[in-house]
Amino acid sequence: MGTDPQYDPSLWLPTSVKEMRRRGWDQADIILFSGDAYVDHPSFGPAVVGRMLEAEGYRVALVPQPNWRDDLRDFTKLGPPRLFFGVSAGNMDSMVNHYTANKRLRSDDAYTPGGKAGFRPDYAVTVYSRILKKLYPHIPVVAGGIEASLRRLAHYDYWSDSVKPSVLLESGADLVVYGMADKVMTRVAKALSNGYNHKLLRNIRQVAFLDSREYADRLDTTKVIRLEPFEKAASDKNAFARNFTLIETESNRLETDRVIIEPYPGGKFVVVNPPYGRLTEDEIDRGFDAPYTRMPHPRYRGKGDIPAFEMIKHSVNIHRGCFGGCSFCTISAHQGKFISSRSRRSILEEVKKITSMPGFKGYISDIGGPSANMYGMKGRDEALCKKCLRPSCLHPAPCRNLDNSHGPLLELYTNIRQVKGVKKAFIGSGIRYDLFDKHYGGQYLLEVVRNHTSGRLKVAPEHTEDKVLKWMRKPSFGQFEELAGKFREICNECGLEYRLIPYFISSHPGCTQEDMRALWAKTRRLDFRLEQVQDFTPTPMTLSSVMFHTGIDPYTGGKLYVARRQDEKRRQKSCFFAAPGAGAGKYPRPGEKALGPKNRRR
Image 1 (cartoon, one colour):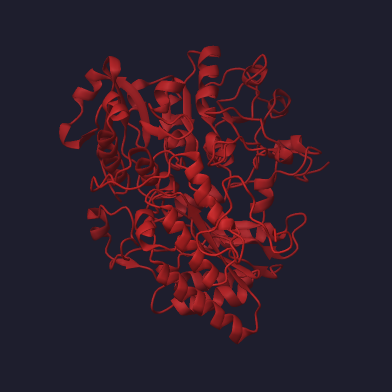
Image 2: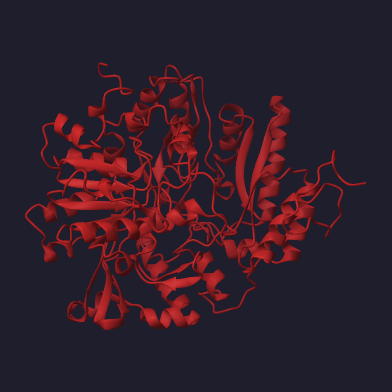
């Protein structure tokens, strides 16, 4: 079949013994297990980790979506690796992937061919790690990805409605790599190259591990943050909240050399080493410039499209990290608060690769990232950033030290439009309108609406009521109304019949039924048809999940209302679907569908 990536499996990381033999391998150095199907693309974590390890000369194989229900042959088919097993639930926490906000089992999975559900277990990192440690007790297991990252310490688990211990205790993994693994995994591989070296592994930044009281007592007390013991945090909501403030504050530092330790029964301690700083331009480029095929593995031919891949296959991620600090979002908790931006060269080379992909018709689906318009942004004086403890550079007001010029991004858009084969490049990621700068903000919105919108511009006000937005760490709804006015003006001036599509959340901590009635009334007044709406789902290691569990603001100790019961959550969400003309306060009962104008009862 030649070198067409649709047919030549040797262009992917090997996923079978046959593919390993084709490369002349009798053993892999590292075997990665993932809850996602294998897509060799820089938006899929296991592919990125595999390619970066491969670039260092390691033999890396990958087992996607192993069957954990049968005789476990998927866990043994490649044999033991020379160095270690890597385990990830995939691009999503497996529980978020499996269940709705009402804890109902989803009927599909966007990371599986054909969108089929049932190809990964609940708590996938724990299940995979336990199996591997049982089969190969002497081979190190290194857990990573968003599920392991945000469960590295005690955390509230919405699906069991309990405070669960670190994933290290539940899974038996030897090491957790948290955050983005670009710098870390190659150092882990190097430390293990000469055999399992306990001391070398514990000197690596951005890892978490389980150790003894003796180890914890030897640490420099001036560089240690000691959390409340797990038993206390699990039984005392105030202690749990105090732990969170310490974790979030430390995680949002630009630079730190402090270790977090969390005591557990039996004299055990979870030790979390400090993270690396943000990636340099060269470092982030290295991950994106690897020789990806940008396609699903040929093993999936005839099994249906992988929805998550179809969504991003013609998109470009231009940066990592987010300094918005939204209470409910895991992005800054996992990727970091400080922005790591790719070089213009790297981005444009990726755009050129996309133009040569089979089926590309000239349209880039997204130029973005965790947010659309944070590219290249940082503090003007980074000495001030090093002292800063704020979880958000935008809330409660934009930081005066923030260089939020949109100039470099506007230049990048121009460069992308000039690439041969690109008819139009859309902005599909969310835009932070509270980030517009005085010099380029108006020009940026004009440019996006005129040249980079498919007819629907998505933004995320999340709510209309300022007291709820305060708990969310989002700007006042007045700023959204101002944006909506400017958007309409641009559309009228340019003769464009475009729509603004706002995202909203119900049942967020602090949000009452009265607040949802107010949201209903305001969005109807502004003539918005609510399409992009969701009920709040508490996810590990976010401020919102801590407020949901404790009912308090962990930074002030103040109490707030929380819609915990499923009937309360359904009532709040039903406000999104109230029938037009129903009148304020008249909504469908929980479980009922709103009646449209054609089938409304008379």
